[in-house]
Image (cartoon, rainbow, N blue to C red; front, side, top):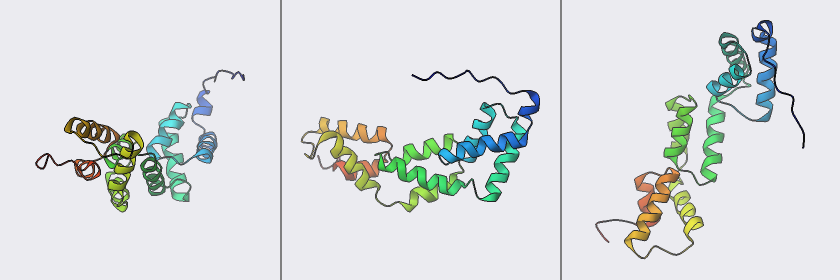
Length: 164
């Protein structure tokens, strides 16, 4: 088991140093993509001043090292592959401060939400179709929790209350 030294808070000079903030930002970006708001918050959490963090994030975006649209596309693709629906993905991205236009464009670019809902349902409940309305309702609640829209859920489960 490795023990970590507790982080000491940065000195006022370190907190205002753009070179330190840039080094921290590049270290974070080396691990994964970030949304601009998410990266700014991470830098502030590590002791950078808000103005310095904002400036560094702006510079990285201008240089192309921080790309919000690439982040959104990767995020949507990853979470859709994990069985999450467009409603939940969009809510998560909004919480991270991503603009609604990028979210809507990336979610609209995928046209396989019904297939993803059906796959999530098959994975959870097996390949058999629900035989009773309570079982359909259970599967529908599961898909709703996963973030699929009502249209995707009805198509995936085959549930139409008027026909049942």
